Image 1 (cartoon, one colour):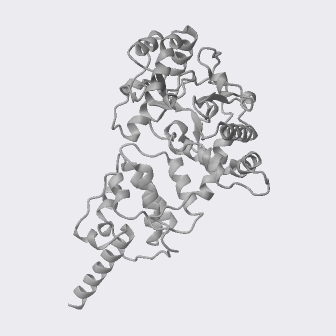
Image 2: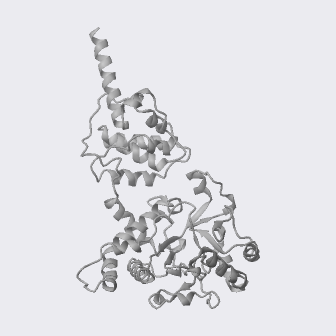
Amino acid sequence: MESDSPDFKEQRTRKITHLYYSRKDVQDTIFEFSKNREITPRYFEGFGKRPDSLQYRGDIFELVRKGATSFHCSEELWEDPLKIVTGMNEGQLNEIRIGWDLLIDIDSKYIDYSKISAEIIIEMLRFHGVKNIGVKFSGNKGFHIIIPWKAFPKEINNVQTKNMFPEWPRIITKYIIHATKKRLIEKITEISKPNKYVKDFQAHKEVMPDIILVSPRHLFRMPYSLHEKTALASVVLNPEEISNFQLKDADPLKAKIRDFMPDAKEGEASELLREALDWYKEHKPVSEETKTFDYKPIKLSNLSEANFSPCIQKILQGIEDGRKRAVFALINLFRSIGMDRDELEKRIYEWNKKNKVPLQDGYIKSQISWAYRRKPVMPSNCREFYQGIGVCQPDDFCKLIKNPVNYIIRKSFQESKRIKEKEKR
């Protein structure tokens, strides 16, 4: 059909862009929401340059004149978005990040499924003490739910919350998926199956929150921005309006302006974050790299750092990127070779002092505490994990092994053998 063609959709959207974005109230709400955020316009199919920001309200219509059809922004809040440089490391980003909002993206082939999911998630958030929640239509067949930065504690166990993006937002999102899955299956089954006792265990996959959206510098459609495929506006709703929402309510020429950002109370999402972190400690999935077998630690009597693999030796010198992944690898390595806890903690804290930007002591303490509540597991296998943090520098011996534990065991065995032969002579 002609109405389904990309050309028709583009013409339909462009037909109203100038009229719609010329509205002062639309410009005001987009501009206000853009503060401290990285933004980029979309020119129907392609995006504009990054990083960018809106300096003046009039910038919005100027970009529309140049062909912009929608506007997208970051979940992360920056002291100055224009300071962002592609390729910045974790420490550099932490220096200029001032916080982050939790953005839950719900989308489905069916708007009714998205409605059910949004209502169940909001109910779950309120149960955890989050009362002030922002909701908007995505512009297509879903909804965006926002919990503002103000609602989160600024520090937990001496770890600054602002520096835990995207780890902590991802954990919260996973916790939400876990906590709402059963109810979601039941509710969707009620509307999709004539026999309510035959549950649709696959239906929830249609509306699970988008984990991909919780990633560094990922952008989402701004409130009251148009959607290229539907020519509808990303309108803001009261949570109580979700069930009765109709697509016609997002007609851009009739859209009523409201604030997407709720007036949250300081720290009202503290319980949600703490519950999510506690849940994750107990349910953290073991990667395929470590889920190999029920590993029993081997006690090495002649432990020498000279026998460590090149990647581990490089980590122990102190690193700039990948410190959180590195501490995970070191804890698992030290436990796997039988190091006692006191010695392990001493070495980890000494190593951390060598890092250009040390991790918070509270973060290290929590990682060690969590590790000792589980059975020892092998550290990640070579090579991709260590390449990812820039420490994979294989020597000839690396060709013989698949894991840093194998490396140190074989090296230590060779060293012991060499010493015994020397003593015989």
